[in-house]
Image (cartoon, rainbow, N blue to C red; front, side):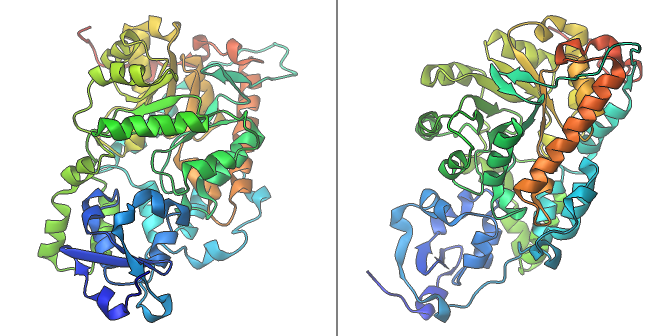
Length: 472
């Protein structure tokens, strides 16, 4: 096997020829630069150097062979002879401690966000917390819950409260699931594996992201049993063969449903994330702008995002797999009706956590649209889910009362892993949500999920923000 000198590798340090060393092996990643979901700048910063520290701060070593073809391998090298890059993704000193604060001191979901902000690296915090443009959509989602008020019923026997329900026919101890969120390794070395193990122990269902920090196989192995249901988020690659191969792969691994992301045909402009990348690029202004200019096309070309995806592709997926299909990212009643007519098993009312199009309406307003113009969708065979800024048991209660089957949490569960908490932090957050939902169900007069009804929520203040007319 060919052995290379550090001077040989160092010569390949630009876009025309980009080599990096990982775990004592040298790879030519020139053709991969524009396919990298995080953009080429991060990779170019490590060109001609040992990039192991930067790589393993966000990825598992076992993903390497999955990401790069064997043809990219150029030879071996002694890592001690290579100049090493300092990772921009390393956690702050607090995260290296065993625990930031005792878990018993974490009383609300928001407490974990405070820990995450202190312990995550600047790159990790920017990636997790940023929204598109002015980030109005993210915070409008939170505001929409505050504009809804509860109408509790009293003098009911609420001695025992049961929060169990089903999602796509699979049992769950709470009407809550783990939304797909990438790069969980920023938060904790166990990343999505910690979420898988914790979800199994708490009786929740995890939706595995398309591009996790760990391999999909490792995440599936982290389940507490082979019977633990998991779903898979699919970004439809413009290469149909690659999409089919991914579906076949997760089918073989035993996932129970496909959640197709439909709200991101192109990449949203996430300015906080972009500013940090520009700051660490080390390049002059002109070059940095040139690197950033092909951002949307770059992401689309990588296959992760697909601007050619249309409703006709739903039929193609149906031909490829018999797994239940959920469309993640419905933002209007018109598209909810089209999803129903296309026979999908579920939809997620979501604006991608405010990370795609800024000022896109809050998912809760989309839910009220459906209640006003197509209420039959909420009582039919298609299950309706909702995500975006769920932080309290009252948020869950309001969504369920208005017709949602279950809600998803993404950022909060990532935050729960930070500060050294890992799986224990995730389980603590689930327990907080469970206690809050149980308590608020009792206060509202409901002992089972089926007893949570629309009359328990006053929507009048938010109803005013629903579009006045639609063409169906």
